[in-house]
Length: 288
Ligand code: ATR
Image: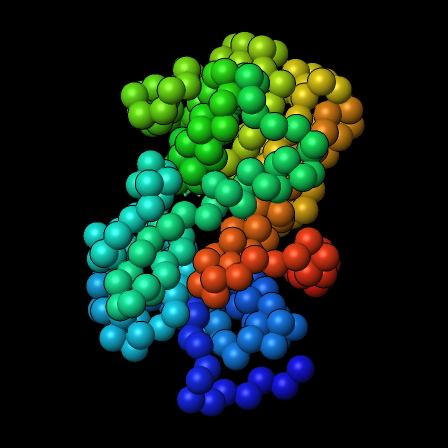
């Protein structure tokens, strides 16, 4: 489909640094073209020192909205007018919508993760004990969502135990869900994994180019009762997911999370709701 920009073209985009690797422009521009929506999605590489100027510029240009990615998801909150409850709990904004000149911040990562998890595993978090590996920004989005979804316990495992404690305390204090924490010693990992059904990796361990690494050393801890979700999507099968598959666990990568956070952002910007068959078509294209 031909792109024709005119006076009514809606501008959306993404700010981050680096930004060259982002798959979002392909997804959003494809959606606009196939839905015949007059919009363009532009990637902007924005250095941290220029974040305020960038947000002011986007506000001044009256864009429809934009995505925010690493390293600005937290800092950008200071420059917005309103923040959704969930984005505030997660402590990060990945989607901004311009509503009558006011910039509203949302976080669609948690919803994207949840939809992907439910669809691809056929399970929910209700009443489940869940191990989350990592305690950074991605871990917080996942942990908040899992806790809000009614998990019975969220166990945070992290190389730096103080950060695991911090996130665990945060869940205990802000969401009515029980959380505990531990380091990544073999005994910690064994105890957590053997007592939980769901294991989620939120660290970058195993991501391209270090594809031979894994956040868990002993795969013998996994069995056919486990559900292992790795938010990494490059490679599509991390060492962790390969091992999980071999042990009979359900093994899912983060491609769906990436996809659905984008779908939810687009729906917000344009005030529309896609049909299931449209979403399937977008997903096929996205995975190519
Ligand atoms: P993100 O926003 O993607 O979550 P982040 O906030 O920098 O990124 O968090 C990265 C997470 O991956 C952290 O939990 C980090 O562990 P530390 O808190 O100990 O740094 C984890 N991580 C990154 N590289 C790691 C490695 N080589 N081994 C173990 N954990 C690692």
